Figure 1: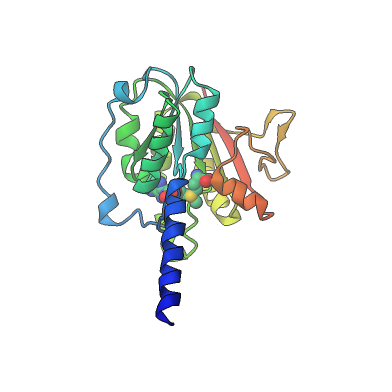
Figure 2: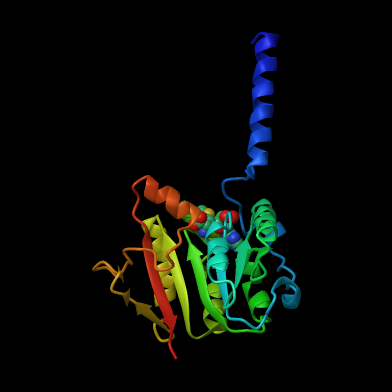
Length: 244
Ligand SMILES: C[S@@+](CC[C@H](N)C(=O)[O-])C[C@H]1O[C@@H](n2cnc3c(N)ncnc32)[C@H](O)[C@@H]1O
């Protein structure tokens, strides 16, 4: 390629990079391997009184919070009655989400750089208030069979969620990949003694004949959900409630 074309090309790349950084774009790897040794150390427990204005409020946790869009909207919508905690294994996303939290002056939401599988129990067992809702929304699918063990929903995490969830607390799962949704469903429904499947929330949020919710009961969609639905994909959602 002639030198002048190369110069023009790198100038274009630089301008694109400057533009993307100004709108908050972050470059991230497609998937990370949560089993690698760098993610095996549990995250430090936050000082709850520093991260939330009132650390006794009921808590919602979003596992694999990604960009943070979903949780930030919820925290803005319901500012005084709940706290919101995002677990995210990609540091750059956490940094950017925390920046937005600061810009919006929200004091009921916090994003943690943490591998949920390694940190959930240690972190949640110290929260002073009740854990009322856990969501796992469009988790990384890790399609290859030999990589299924990298999926975030594994037995120890499910056990820890059920242990820490307060009676009447809920678990909301969804995926645009049927196989992943089934895997999550099977793991949670193996605890039928503790969890009840909710198939009607109100007349506007109902399930199909397989028990998948036909719309998002939270009223706010995640980034992955928006993308998948815009491509015409179906989202497989389920809601559970811990028995009293
Ligand atoms: C496909 S994205 C979906 C993000 C968001 N929930 C959504 O629906 O738009 C899955 C997210 O889970 C994060 N993740 C994967 N494994 C994780 C783990 N073990 N602990 C915490 N986050 C994890 C990924 O980094 C990624 O941001």
